[in-house]
Length: 254
Image (tube, rainbow, N blue to C red):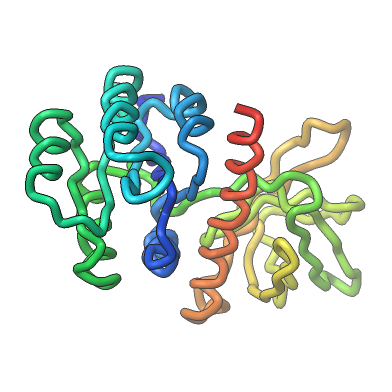
């Protein structure tokens, strides 16, 4: 699979509080975003994501020379990665250094322009760098214990563990065999994801053999009409949170 075909990981290194709402908004636009507050660990891990996009807050973590050295090294070590700078410091000389001398590809973004304008610039930058790839929805793999669902089906209460999740659907592993077939309609599914609850309806669109003995994985697509805008936004935020927890674990062991 060509790098980036299924989207690129977007990292914000030492994100300031003003970016919290902006990053949530990017996640709701189906960009795969992550936060990191450890430049050394992220640098070690970036080899696993050679086409990632990284926005560095040069106002935190290192001094000016430290950040210039870090970005230059990253440009050499991960030439396919896209690097941008975010800062409150509107310094024309510094901008020139990063854009022309260091050769960052994803812009020098001044945060004083406000959250809405910052979000617009970042979204356009990500679009220009094809951060979504060909996919329409960000997918989160769900480690055991992360997410469950409960649904009543033909008089029985079915319980399942989610193995992956997106705002479009999910894959589930049932606790007991239930004879669910492709085409089965599941109404009022109760989802519990990282302690958060929401409900949706869906239909079983595929079934595949599991890796643990006779278990099967059922793929369920959500009925868009069962998700209002608030539920869709919450679902996208939960996908972001599940992915962030997995990335935190990966970086911790980098």
